[in-house]
Image (cartoon, rainbow, N blue to C red; front, side, top):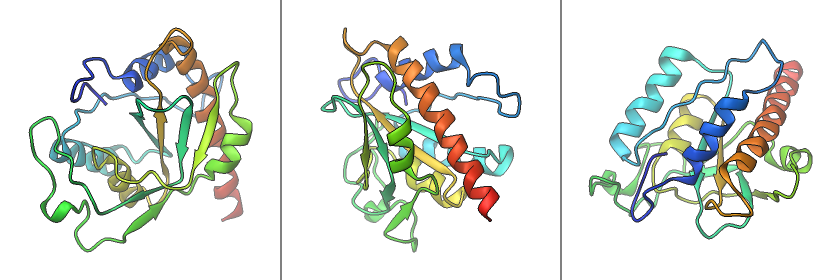
Length: 190
């Protein structure tokens, strides 16, 4: 995501830029594509829907910032209701609902608990969260809906001396490699 509220630099985008430099390793079967989205409900929903319709990715990983966090947080699910915070344009969804008529909660098809156990990097703590609650934008629930669970949400802490963008980028590389492995396992089972 791009800047929002008082955050003129979004640590999630800075970490993703570092990840983009690193890539996802030697896996030639996976193409990493990055995109900065504005913290704008309507624009984000439109663009995420387009990603799923046009590109049909194997996995979409959405990055957010949790300024109170001290660790990288892997979110298992996202809620459809309760979007009361306004976006960068002062808008919020009608009825505070992302997907009208949709389920209250959507789960990621990626087992975040398993990824969390194997996704450690250097001194970066990675924790599991069963419920992302309501993000300031509706990307996770929109992506989970269109991707039929082949989406994930990761929240990173604010940048600091202890957690610079370069270290967060390396951690994201390992975490996303693990997420792709989880997707492969799921596909092999089905």
